[in-house]
Image (cartoon, rainbow, N blue to C red; front, side, top):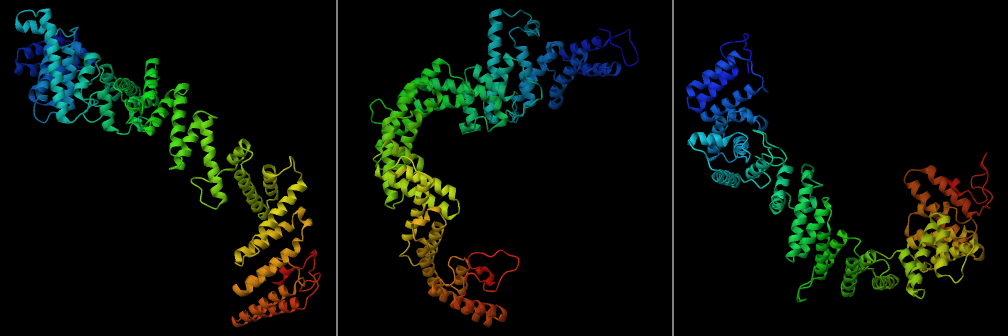
Length: 614
């Protein structure tokens, strides 16, 4: 190849001829001659980075740098795999040999740059197809051809020796099988991957191949166990593989393969729980179970938690294992039936000692096999016990019963008195609460539900529902009649006032009961609360002035008491207004006349506008 020089074409020599001379001098160990020739080449010719001459030039400079111990320069100048055919085999061999020797020196066990040069070049030189004619180089140096048998044995021995050296360096440098130089060496022998000086960021410190390539290599070599050991050391919780490790998603498929393989091995070894855990993680990572692995899952599910003698059986381990197997094979009816039976057995076993756990087992059994009679019977027994405790005022174990499950129980067992009584109390409480809050529609709905559950008729109209709602409010108020604390008295007034406003109140003398409750509350407040509390009760307009003399007296006394307090506090105006109010209430003004005269431009209310007192 004729290459133009920097000052035009030269008829006396070419770049190739100068480079050939430099390479020959290098191979004859005439090193003082090599560098002047390279300097002349650089001065006379313009070298392109991709030109074969430039590649050979860089390789020769790299070999010289390696001899001089300048390994940063040697790594930078080392050709990549696709350019190795352009370089003289002797030059490559010199650079490879020096790199291997340098790695054996103290402190080089973490120098990934030198390792990348050694791995790249020796994998090329020891290739079975001998692309660099390394055999010819050895024949020339030995002066005799190398027999085929010896050549094959020699290649294998050299590869093993390099592998052993790299493994020793890995151990010294603390690298696992995913970052190991030995792994990179075997990857390079099968598929050239290593680039001089390039360090992948995802595999770990000093790694020479990407994490995915390393993982697949371990799988291909049947070393899935080593892959799992290395990955587990990095991420001890398999539950995080690899969804919570964004940088390791590429490992999902090889990891799944390794887990499935280990799962099969563990089934053969009788490690049922461990095998199911492996299969479960593998499927979560995207693995699809073939038929032989599905059969292994069935075998593990049938045996997990059981010992050959039966003495070491573990029901909880068995349930956990069957759950794993059921997740893996959800359509397998035999596994589902076995899981259900085990859940029911364990639920029955602990029913007396741990009701909550027993209940969880029965609920899960019904989820796996809906309608299972034994599971339903066990769960209903717990519900009945909860209802009896609730009706007796005893704390219920776990969550309180839900209305829907109690209704279902009553449907299955119409004669269950506890369910009927609980529903009656449940809907009564809902109806009363809604009515007091002004949610009449909700209150009627709850009252109707109560009648439907516990009543004797098939249907109930709106009149029936309103009458029932009024009865509930009155009954609740009557239950507080003997109570003397303020909260109970307030609650009784609230219940009766709510009942009075409902359409079905005409059948009861609620007004009279409400007046009596108001008087009880007013008398209690008179002795146990500030005067303003009595006045606030009066201003709620629940009883007309003049209806009950005792009530009017309590209110009058409260106004007079507050007038004295205001006078002492320096508020003569407020005291005067309180005395005026007391005087008018005590005088028994007719309800049609507001205490302060007619209100202009306002419609008059039927009852006394007691809010005009202020």
